[in-house]
Image (cartoon, one colour):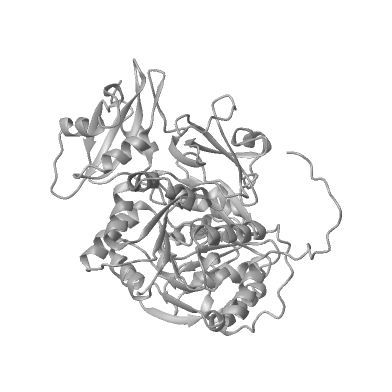
Length: 548
């Protein structure tokens, strides 16, 4: 990385720190009467405002200070998309501590690893999640205090436990907010990849501040919007949606505990509160469409649904558009990128010269890069690929909200994850003449058959467009002659059957005969990671001997 050179001094207040503390304090001053609608873990809805809730944030910050949490200490939080979780987003970094996300969908051993690797000294946990974390308590290495989020006392075996509501009731608001350096860590998240232990990414105040500004721009969020984060607040900060809402003074809807059984409540809130900005993965938005349709919803004009995690099927994008006039906005990023990097919003110059069919087909692309993230897409020897929409390479990134390392990882282990200051994403993509990227696979998921590459993602997305298919997963399995050959798992819609001939006929629209899967199997459900992505590692393991 080239060294920084300094020109003529400016007259600006360049030492003014961009921090989460300043963001929430100034939002309260500017938008104090903006509403926060929230649902607790018992399903009860409530209402407050930025200003009313700020007193609780200040009391919570002071309470953690009294517990001995100091500058740079890590505080683990395990909660749903609740009002208390929102408060902790601000209260913990207010005193210079690090808000550490505990992903409740991690396997127990991985969750224990995150607690110990982050060296959390205090763990905050919702009452509904105490049974899940309690068996790990004795094996945590540095946890001194457990803080329980509940309206009253509950039965538990957590050592040295206190109650959040009692803490803030007994504490006066924080007397003074320290002027934290913007380069200090404000939050920590851990990757949920399917190989190895989770890797720690520590986000700075500055990185999240600038990331939020960019998301505001990409989704054109304003004070007139209503933002409902559906992506869990324990996973990559719900893609920054809370900070985005607060930055512009938008009404915030916090849906609380989320599951397939609560889709009715979530969709009621979406329509009743007039939500215009939300986020989630295809595995959530697909069933949500059916629930909205069953309720007779006709018009959701103005709704922007940021969709990531995996590629949303074109059929789903078109269905939301044609049925509700809602926009499914395809985005891409990772835990290492705070997470949003590209967002697919069609600029007017492109729209003007495209047919309606071209515009719709562009929905499968992940979008274009923002001006403040530097990128390269390189082939196997490091050369940048041409912008022809066909030649694939790995995406490399550098920028103010891109990680430069992993927590505690020794330098020798970082070498294959970074190249000349760029973070290696592991995602394979093409880029076209308009600067739009199309993810074709993960490096580890590309199927290498007879010296040629087959895109598992493209095959999955085409298969999901079949009227009988609900979900599809494609992996490469070891083959004695061809190195690897495709294998497909299918989840069918209720009451459907499918034949090999139907599968082949459908795939031959876009794939050559030699690229078709050797075998397929219909299953009840696909194995998934903690954040709802298809867990291809499990599939490869379970079927590893199929072609041998």
